[in-house]
Image 1 (cartoon, helix red, strand yellow):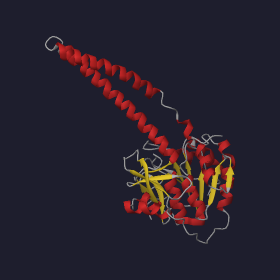
Image 2 (cartoon, one colour):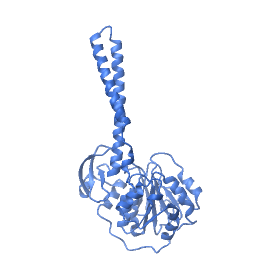
Image 3 (tube, rainbow, N blue to C red):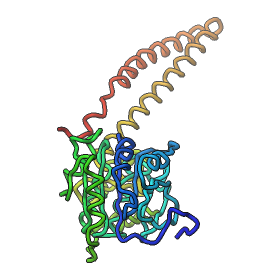
Image 4 (cartoon, rainbow, N blue to C red):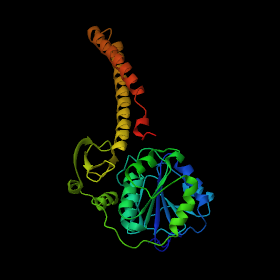
Length: 342
């Protein structure tokens, strides 16, 4: 425990873990004033922010009666405090203590929601409450499934109420949620859940959950992959390693030997990002080669006319290729088809 941190306190009897992506900042700022002062449980919140600097905790503190703080390593979550994952670090619970990790990205995101949810499922079992808010794609679905499988409570923002409904829809597609509510009703619901009798009976974690948590903590060896999945035909867009298709589903998930993790939808999304970047990189390299060839033809026209003519002809061919490649890069499909339909 980090005794020097005033936001840390004695272990809470229950915990609320919450995740959001697109629209999440407005969602947590709208929720904060709807939570009563001295809220009886800690809330751990992940917002997809990547490595960007943020002062979100200051905004949340100003918006409501309960303090919000950046999560710190070794802190025991304290009731009535909202802990926000810092930039570019996963926030986990390890035996009830906050653990920060710069480990492999999940769903091309760090911080990601699933690692926190899975760790809460293992650390608190039926005393964990998971909340999936607005966002794109499906981060949070697997973690919410783990919370539910360990006897915890699954809460999902009503997709019709969400700024980006894809994440709530994805969660509802693979988890039988206990509560589906609009944002306005979430504060009173969480207060009601926080005051109910605390479930005590432990639930056996589902197969693969402890191994997945070990990956998030960095305690991962490649041999373990064969116990929880099998090699797929896909490679990791982050490190080019082999992706293993995991046995626990839905949702369909993939994990590489270095720990990068994807759902099928986040893999498709990330592959599109990588392929788009590759096309632009190829276009730049071809344009540079064209320019070099034209300069070579210009400087050698008098002394080496035959070679200069060859260089000019190749430059013209490259220019035609670049026209086609630019059309391809500009006609890449939008990301909309990765979201679940209405």
